[in-house]
Length: 605
Image (cartoon, rainbow, N blue to C red):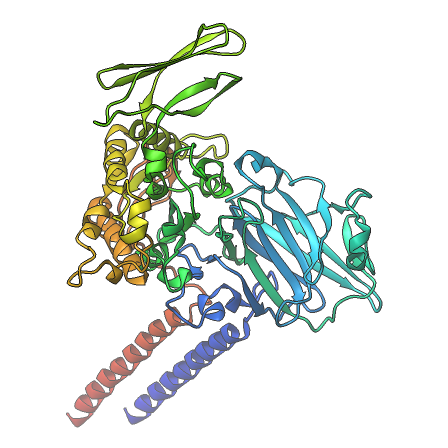
């Protein structure tokens, strides 16, 4: 029996040694795998690599395995010194990537997409190349390649053919080389220094005095290089993913996309750090990696088109539609709430000297009691030129155009115009010419109260708040209304409850105020939409979706909840292999103990 026990232990020891070798070999192989097949350091896709501060959300990991960037970064790339790399990316606007850069990215080769100046030029995006330390674009692509689509994953290839005295840089999109060119009309002698040593052959950049091959930094720059200069928001979002992982389907990697459209408050003005303390940044952190929250706020923007800067002509409006959101948080209205805009009457149509159909202001006088006054003006031949007629609360405007045609319009007040134009803006997220998959549900996030000197200028917030409620009630595509006015109305200008707890200037929330807004929006979403991190959220309209426990057909845009599926084990997840090995070893040890005990008991008999 003793020899049998010895044999048993020999076998057990051999099994343990073999298992240990297997585990050790597997872990060693995992440790050695530091780059994927696109020649990318896997750390590139980790938020911690770019932002040691875990509270920052300018770089963010999403549940689909991608990393998104909403501001510029420079990092040591480390793997493309003498060859190149491939990576998956997607974007909804302009961006720049600087390759083979030095540590501060003051030198390098820049590849980018030129953003349009406004929504009406949305089809005029193009690729370009320049130097990081240059003053002009070196070359453009002839047109945006048909195999490039905004908001969808694209494979970007960057390859360097290095010779002793020159470097050729080849850019490809989905394995098709981008053809860059320069024409005489694009070449400006004032920028001849930029073209020194640079030429283009077969659509590729050739540098006869190349940058040092030891340069291995990369600069990521999502931005808008168009739009009104009075809008300081140049940030955009760009996403990267490993070519080994993108497109993998699982039941726990769905990401719900939320676009937040608004003005300077949404943009983050007033917050200590817009990438950390704006209410949109807070909301992203509260919702977690199963949600992609896109800040589409731009300073000074408004709903109504007779204002200083209408949102409807901004490039961010176009990009927010390309983002293909599942939900839109509609937070526009603060800049509309000024007496200079609100206390006016309007009509939609041509003017006396134009056939263009657009919103136009008509100045109607009021008496000392605030009632509108009828008024008629005449031409030189004493025929009626314009006429304002008042019937109870209805005001009618008549005019004779220069071509002799006559026009009569019922004038509408700012509230009705705001409701009409706000609904027109919101409905574009369900049907537009830029995104064939538009399907968003709209949630209105109301204006706040204003205080002090700002309250004297932005003095129609209460009226705007009421108009927003009416807008939400009249549009079947709007599924919710978030009241921010009531939670800020309690602040005043007394020492006991001073508004500076919430806002430093009386208009823009400070970091505390942005946190309050984020909490209010998050609480609404949590209570009314029941969107949970561990749920699969399907909001893509009619589309077959792999889900648990079986495939389903989604007949309409809706939210469907399932328990999150457990992740499958992969060779890269060393923690998923080790517990199984430990269980096997423990089982063998317990089993051997039982066998030994039985053998001893039998031997004693």
